[in-house]
Amino acid sequence: MEFAMPMNSYQNGHHVGLLAETHTDVLTVIGKDDIPRDFPLDSDTISIGRAHDNDIVLNDYAISRFHLRMDRTEDGWEVTDLNSTNGALIGGKRLLPNQGMAWNVVDPMLAGPFELRWRRFEHDALRNSTIVMNVPSKAMVDEQNEVSTSNEYVELGAQIDRDDLLPGESAMVELTLLSLGVSTDDFVLEVEGVPSEWVRLAEPFVRLPPTEIQKSHFTITIPHTGMAVRGDYSVRVHLRSTTTMRAAAMDEVHFRIKEAHGVEMSVRQVAHKSGVLCDVLLKNEGNSADFYTLAVNSYSDKIHFNARQWKLALTPHTGDQVRILISPTKRKWFGDVDQIPYSLHVSSESGLQRNHEGYVDIQPLLDLQTVVLSFLVVAGIAGLVWLILFLLMG
View (cartoon, rainbow, N blue to C red):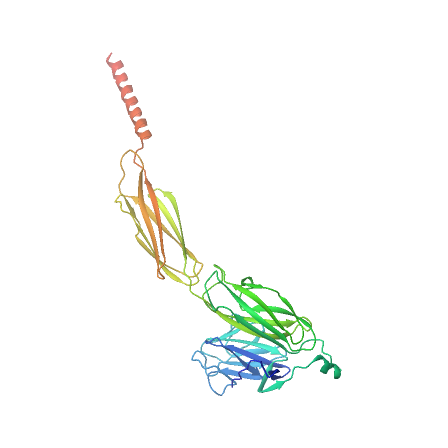
């Protein structure tokens, strides 16, 4: 059965939360709608599947009726694939059927379209009924001789200013922080879900006085190249107390990297005994796969090509080379070098167009120096023959 975790809020000056349970683990499931849903792991064995008699029901046909089983261990949880049709991955490693695998708390698990993570929240809100909890004042605690040394209750809210990004663009995530404890405490902000080089924190450490709202922010910048593949991303923001080193609060924002296309073309010509080799390198500079057509053409009938058209399929940030042999159809015996123009045209299925204009030098069969030298050799030989005949006849 599914437990939706209501967000904490304020009503009539009071903090509205859920009753804290100690030593209760939480399973967060993110589906196609990108909305995280929390399930309390309040049993030593948890069954996950599409059938309604599972402890946690994932209603998708990519999930088997009885897909997974979670078993509590001393260190956390062990997951067993119950011989499901589509299997599951933990930290990129596929589970073997009917063989348990330890589930590290930092590794996500993928099953069908769902991403699953578990965490241990000692102060999480996990009971069905909500309660209204007065914010304690320091004087009230002093009266009871229970002065707290760190915050027990912290609120963290994250909001992203734009959720559709192209490579090279940035988004700002605004953070609202509130301590409901009775003493000032220092916290560290941790961001996960995207590469660390994408994130720039305005301040990684924050100090929260009791019952005061603080603001902070960080920036997510999508690089032009690298791992900026199109798709949906979830960014989790954790607030961790430097006193206890426990996770005090967590919130999540979502954004999508939109499809972007780009192609780079470079051309290199190399002399060849049959003409000229033209090496064309195409590289997909976009963030999604694309199909390319390379065509070569010339308005002159003095050259021909080993082919006229090539088809290439390139995934993001990969390249491929096409080698074109350009050969002369005919050469003159002697005279100047002919420069024959040709053109390369690249078009992609996404609508990109690239052009390159080049020239091929067609050498004559005999250059002027060779002709003169040949004439001199022939004339010399003829003169020598004439001299020999003259001497023999004289």
